[in-house]
Image 1 (cartoon, rainbow, N blue to C red):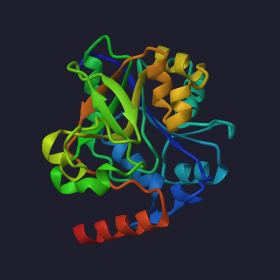
Image 2 (cartoon, one colour):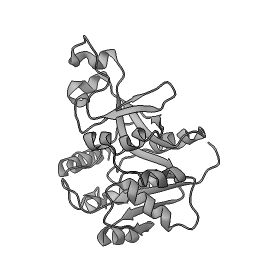
Image 3 (tube, helix red, strand yellow):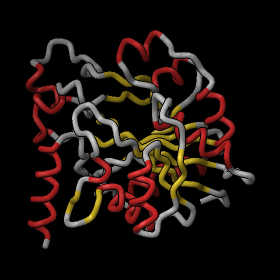
Image 4 (spheres, helix red, strand yellow):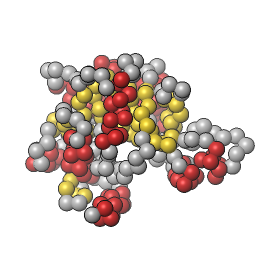
Length: 253
């Protein structure tokens, strides 16, 4: 890997429509945000939590983590990362945006995204996981799980909540047997100069249509390099997800 300075930022907000207070919900006796932080710390020397809430700020301080207080006006984790960068005297080469609701994120996933920057042309990187035939049509067709199509150089062509590509003359229940589909994992990394640019961009029609911020970047002509993983993690979006995660921990112990 090229000699570059990476900074991992974990955006973490208290307000959530489906699960208020999620970062501080206990999982295996520790707040979710602490699980994420400890996982990220295995890979990155420089990392911090970026929050807009004093309760999260204090919780991170309590477990000895680095934390930065940011505005409560941000619409996305990307915007929150940009504010953190603006506060730094010395800026990193690459910023890695790790979602604060991924307590089982694997070191291999973080390393896969970092490796994308071995290519000097990489502006933004993200992560995808191939669906298996065993996942079935219901999982593939879930609009809460965006799909990605990539080119021969591992750059994303498009992200969609719809199933892409459409397989003509093949029953949808058999699509996974006839084509490799990719699930988007919401882990991003950006060259710092590009991060400033994308935070200044207005929303585009594609982003508004699909409610996927990465479409703003594609529509503006930026390239998004794709890293691959076979690891399936459990993201925490609802209290039901937290229960599944707790059961997962109990089965491993």
